Amino acid sequence: MSLFQLIRGSKEEKKWLQYAGEMDVIIDIEDDSIQTKMDMMNFTENDLKVIKSIQPIVREHIDQLVEEFYSTILRVEHLKEMIEKYSTVDRLRETLKVHFIELFSGKIDQSFVGKRFRVAKTHYRIGLEPAWYMGAFQNVQNSLLSIVCNKVSNKEEIQTILSVVNKILSFEQQIVLE
Ligand code: HEM
Image 1 (cartoon, rainbow, N blue to C red):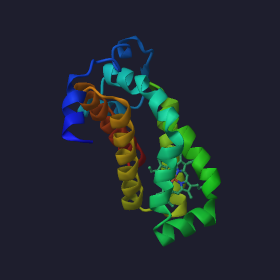
Image 2 (image 1 turned 45 degrees about the horizontal axis):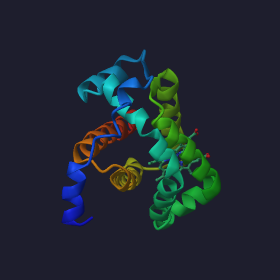
Image 3 (image 1 turned 60 degrees about the horizontal axis):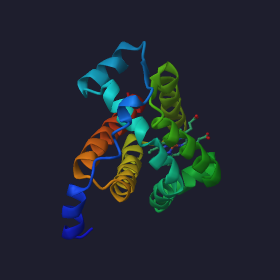
Image 4 (image 1 turned 60 degrees about the vertical axis):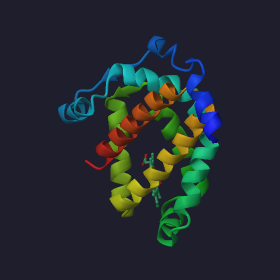
């Protein structure tokens, strides 16, 4: 992005988040340690509304997101072997698409938490070390960053959105790595 585009972008109308406040979201957590994690990051209902408001962008670019995810992990030979041993790229691609679209659904309840515990168990069973899992997340974060920056032009909106995207990605990793 050129400097000119950046400056012009900063003056563009705020439009993306104007309806975020109207989003229906649910936070319904029984597990104290999970609630404490949310409190620690100051992860609020308003944040979740922002998350839900960008679900259409994530859905629109889900193929790109998942492709970028795989292109990086398939370059690591032993991760490639792990996928081939326990699953297939096609199967995991579909699993990941559903997983990331759901992450932006605006619903954090016991079922959300339960699914993350299951991811943890599955990764433990196949011997995936946390460092690789976290590395994969870094690529997901980068992809989301470029997807949001391409779609949203107002600088303040970009900042708000990326800040809550970082929160939910961190929250997800905290639950899975607990
Ligand atoms: C399974 C998410 C990183 C390999 C899964 C499942 C999810 C998931 C949702 C299905 C769990 C279940 O219901 O049992 C993620 C996310 C990652 C990540 C969000 C990071 C952004 C990785 C990496 C590998 C990997 C780096 C590298 C090998 C696998 C395999 C399975 C699996 C092989 C399927 C095992 C089976 O079907 O038995 N993952 N994963 N994942 N993941 Fe990951």
